[in-house]
Amino acid sequence: MTTTHNHPADTQPSTENDFRFSLSEFAGSLGDLGTFIPLFVGMVRTCGLQLCPALLLSGIANIVTGFLFRIPMPIQPMKAIAAVAIAEGLTESQILAAGILTAGVVLIFGISGLIGWLNRIIPKSVVRGLQLALGLKLFIAGMKMIVDTHAWVGWDSAVIAGICGVIILSGKPTSRLPRTLIVFAIGLGVLLFSNPELLTLPQPGFSWHWPDLGHKSDWIKGLWAGALPQIPLTTLNSVISVCALSTDLFPRKPAQPKRVAISVGLLNLLTCPFGGMPLCHGAGGLAAQYRFGARSGGSIVMLGAAKVALVLLFGGSLLAFLMNFPSSILGVMLMFSGMELAKVCRDQRAKIDIAVMLVTAAMSVALNTATGFAVGFLFALIMFKVLPRTRLR
Image (cartoon, rainbow, N blue to C red):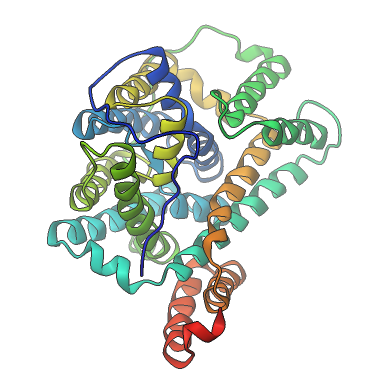
């Protein structure tokens, strides 16, 4: 199986690998927030993920990653785990268990060098089916948030959702400021206008409790609902594809699959037990940050420092802000995040690949993601064995 990746059409491969801090670098670091914000806020709002430790540890991960790779290597929520968590209402413990299990497997594959073997045995059409299903689940979850407001007009209503949707759709892919970030700012404005009592002095510091990871049922749920679908996505998108893209964009200092896999593994094993959300790298995030101006690890260090400062300065107020964030606007953000996750499936052109992708997606949506992966994988093995691929194009 060959792995493909998308090269930003409006850029040329960079030969700059120095460590720089500039306005352009910081602007580039914001390129992936359109994915980060809705998934992060969704897990905090829906699943009870601890806001301050999750944001603080992701910021520290940004800083470490920037110094480690010295290119704008993104830090993203693990999308499969985040999508399932938001759509199915996983608890904090189940989310963290899924992250730890995924990290352990990826670390083993990275250290042993078997990451390439895993990438080869899992058909890309199955991975695309999982991404399509997860995108649909996020879209449905976002739509449900809008419907559950039970309001057509008002500060948290279908009309506000429609306006924000138009803003996102009107944005150009090459825009310096991600439209989802603009919509998030609108949400904060609506929040403060409708809840002026939140305009109080910021409360420094943050609350934290030790995550309860002692229940066997949480580990079983985390394995089947989160880790199983996340592992193939991590190996394909967070390791193989991001390394291939880094070779195009930064030929003097590309990321290596083994090093990236070890990075993902250690990153989560060191943060998830303390309440950090499951994190990974990603080709889409690297492309977005590069497109918006990021050319060195300095961009990621600045983003991480901003997250850490945000928690330390406003930690006591952040939770109140996000828990009261307009559901209609968060719903729109999740819907478009789902669309972004699903649209990568367009590279499946052969009929047999489309069939495998659709079967995987249908079973994942109708039953659960783990079952969808298992059925899709078996269906792919049967189809590829019985039917010649050349006759099904």
